[in-house]
Image (cartoon, rainbow, N blue to C red; front, side, top):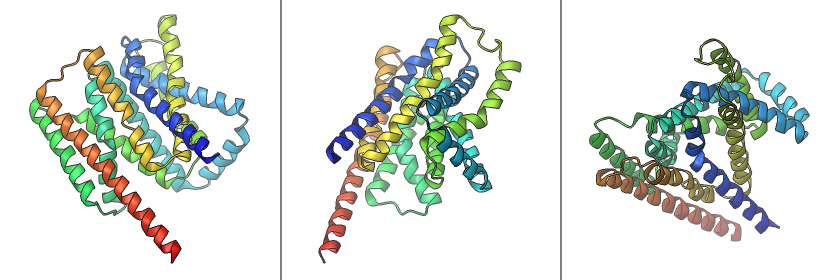
Length: 305
């Protein structure tokens, strides 16, 4: 039974990251829509889709109880609001980067995300870096520095995506809220602003594109919610190490799409930079496997005593 649970977790996690990895193809279907409008539609339709799912799966009462509990705690409500702002900024940068023809840079952001997690944990949680983590962070820094020198500018979009998603994850760590309630609340908080933007500031009135594009915008809610729900399922059923392995499926697929499908430039200098980042990921992953194995041995020894 436990083996089946793990298998379900691995499949759910892999599917989540595959969907995230090919998401640039979806946003490319709506290049005629400005990034800010795509973001607004993504927020609104994600909220609508979550309400629909909660109703269909009969989770309405449980979610309402959790929402009432959250709003009785101002600190928790403030953190969820901050999380909503961070994920909104992350989504906008990703959409803008992809539709500006920089899928490769978007992939870079998600490659360095786990390493930014380590740095944030060091700063905010006062966690000490292991030797392997220090080497991994140094290699990633070298890779980003090479890209900065080569391009003549810091890869701000990639760094901003990594930082906003890492901070979002940090808040999630401190605010124990179910996936259903979390995503619903986050989109609910931003939805009024998205509606105001579409109704009064966008170039086109609400849902005034062709039928084809309108359906793509409606589908934005589905392609946003499903991977997040799959990821939540995976996180509950498999180890953090396994999640760590799976998370590189997404940026790898993005990189392949950027170079092979969208013919973005990828010369020897960029390859060298990415090799440094891939080496950082390898060192980071091996370090965590080693530390987990050591902790299990110590725990086992303590139990035997």
